[in-house]
Length: 271
Image (tube, rainbow, N blue to C red):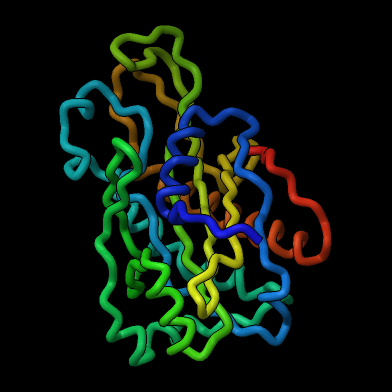
């Protein structure tokens, strides 16, 4: 088992930016799990669910000169708030660990007294503010993860981080970064899980990326008939929630497969 020094949120940021063009396949590495740390009787707790603040994607001409905070729908807070319970339900289905109920974690004295870390991630020349789901706190310090595992009386704790983007297709002409003409948009979500034991060691790390498929009836695809229209980020929120939930399901499937002795590919299909 290798110990990774790159924090999960930084990793999610890198992956999210690399796949902003939404190629059909991407390299995320295989699921890395210390199998002896997990088992049906092992108890775990999700202690952090966060996402990049910005819903990335091609903007319209008018939006390019507007602060992101003033563009409706570019803040991912509503998306991650709707996803946290779905993530918990998904992870709770694994037969290789027992997940502490969300309410038990969030209402514990240990968690209430926890001083969350600064809600920002910096990687090389990039800096990104993050959002934290509902009543969660942002945790990035491996020592805090370890202490939480001890204080909550569990075998390990899990941090989940996500990134959301809009993939655009079509457009016959590109001018100053804008693709003009009839375009289609779909939501993309990347998710990373990092689990730590009581020693602060990484015992599970994996990422996956999924893009909403036009054939998926729940994936809202917006067709732009104007060459200069602003991107409707708000309209793509339901699609981002749906595809984010599916990304969590893929993440768990890769975990379960690895625990069952199956190989997980370093190459993943985005669709």
